[in-house]
Image (cartoon, rainbow, N blue to C red; front, side, top):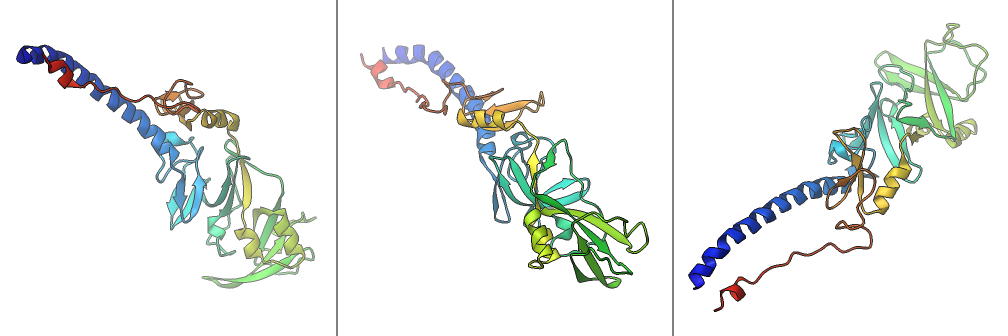
Length: 277
């Protein structure tokens, strides 16, 4: 009798096992996206770098195109117009990111002189910034100069002059200086330069803040529903990664992991109870 009962249960057990394995595999895929996008980028001690940024330990579907971060020499970097910008901090509520020119990091005499350029489809300059213009190898005194520094190059020591206001005549156009570069700095740093309480290097290394051109309301709604913000790599649209699956906007209220709900637990059958005769 027990043998016959076992034979009759084998097809049912096989089907149940098959369904269980496939459900677990499906959930594992969704869990992977959710888990990957739960991780912040942490490079060089700068943590909290999340959506819309991706890279390093975050998959490309955890962020948006153009916001890739690379960990270079233990520093988080984003690249725009072939210029690397070092991430100093992020502000999710704004949302914004504070960056500094990597080619100017700890030096105001880089190998090449290139103006600051950002992608205005992805970023915008926040308020509270001032353009700092640096003039190189000037052969005459510029009355409006705030301060100057000397730095060493392969061609010897050169003087660098800083100005935070517009000049009637461009010293480079008139031949008074050989090169100029514009670097945004915080207005507080510019005022400190005017008061001679900081250096050009410290003002530049303090970086500047960029606003992120993203739909932050959309991401906040996803997070509030228990999800993680990301990208639908098929459509290019927004995805809200949840424990059960990805949704277009927010997590399903009945899904595992949704706010205020407890995920269902599996139900196990006691096979011995079916074998008793």
